[in-house]
Length: 633
Image: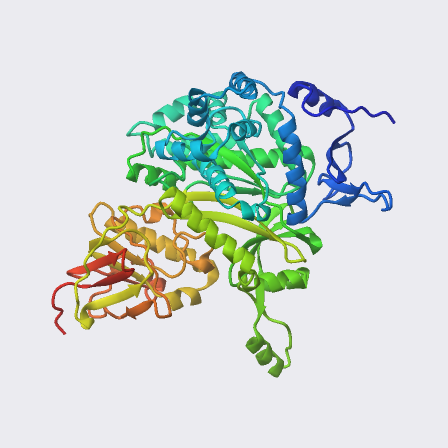
């Protein structure tokens, strides 16, 4: 057997690519207390853990035995070591954009890094938003820009979502240094927005895109462009770079996300408008590459989704240049029996599972997974239902009953203090409430690490304003809330109230729940263009992809609503009053609007009351909806 060492960072991308093509075995090796070999290519062999990193102790008194680096906490330590090594070496994959960064880095090493260089880097790579640029200058250091460039495929911008995530991580790193140990190291890679244009041009889609940008082609040509984006191929040099990224992640599942120019900025969240795709990342290297490319195509094609188009048009952004960058993030979690990975989004009955045997993302009943989950994991995210267990025992059907609450994690004071301080810090620095997305990885010893995946400023209008709420007779009050609304102070007249009965919705068959979203879409179409302010009262989360959590409407199904107000009705002291039958004397217009949806008549009520108003006082936390003038009866 002959083997040859390659020094990391000393060879061109093309040279390493040729070696990869011809060798039978290619290992990436790191040292840091232990030795970590990471198989990148193994000729004619495959197993479900082959391409994961492995480790072996360097202590002489310990037996030399290699173990798979598995589990979120252990993998986090490994990638922290990888990041440290990356900082010592320079990528040899050069283009004109890289040469600019290389020259800037050389100047920095000589003690020169001027404001003009930083401006060019921020505007070309991160954001053109002046408010965000100032925050980036405050929290980023020159080496942060250079490390970021080393994790990019192609040139261009990282997009709004990636910029928000990176900025939030730097804010927390700087403002809360005592909590750094609880955060996973930065482990994302990015396909620059210029690759999006390269893909369009190389697949002869440019003329279609130009036609879609016109007023008459905005909607009519979108479907053709979407189909073209889904069926294109990537240039060979881009495919090689994709292959290099997949080698880095090994067989760890990844998520391919959207990060467009306009996404997650102040006033334009684009929440849920573009696609994210899980890659379970199993199979041969070529199979994994094909699945990854399909995921990137899906994200690109989502720019032509009807909800995204409606959202941009409603905000006057239909003529703005909307290029798509693509972040790739490790979605590693602990493996359990049958090589199934349990993700951190739970509902009452359903969980998402990355099934490494079937190589797919699936949904499954929580009860069917209980025997696969270790006891420590169940105690962290679930609780026993002892009343249900007692009832089953009386029926001679004894078994354990678990339900998901994440109570064990919420009782971890270190975790809750971290989350509270993180949100308050981001709110203070942004000068604006923020919406964050994160994952938590746990281990059997109770240790945890947090990965901050997204941070977007929430639109609140003018903060600090006051709206006087009039004293209404109790018979005129539809609902009165305390500390249950989001947004600034406001007074709005309500023309239409759409009520969806919570109990009736949750008792409706699971497979048929999307019909409720279709009915909301039909109501939306009916009132579209009529300049009506509509109050949509729906159980659970609006726009969720999980029907058991709420009505799974898309933005296109509510885009015609001129006014949607975000407040919550709780079953506690925060809901001072709620008169569900307030409009019982008015005609229910739902059967007339949706005559083909008779089966939903017990779930929906659509009313058009007169002189109904909505008030929210940001400073006092009071929210009221009711009839302004005297109501008869």
